[in-house]
Length: 50
Image (cartoon, rainbow, N blue to C red; front, side, top):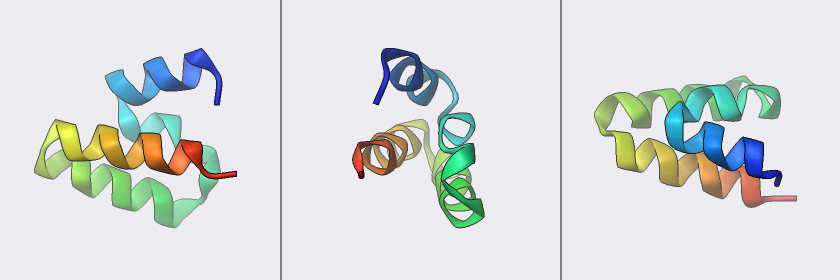
């Protein structure tokens, strides 16, 4: 997980997980619409997985 991805996850979470698959992007997008904090947390969790 690079520092660029972390900054991107904080600023715009769906864009940071776009290469992880359509499902991850959709989940993060919906969580971001529900609230910014859940979207950021989900993006960081997805980016932290191997």
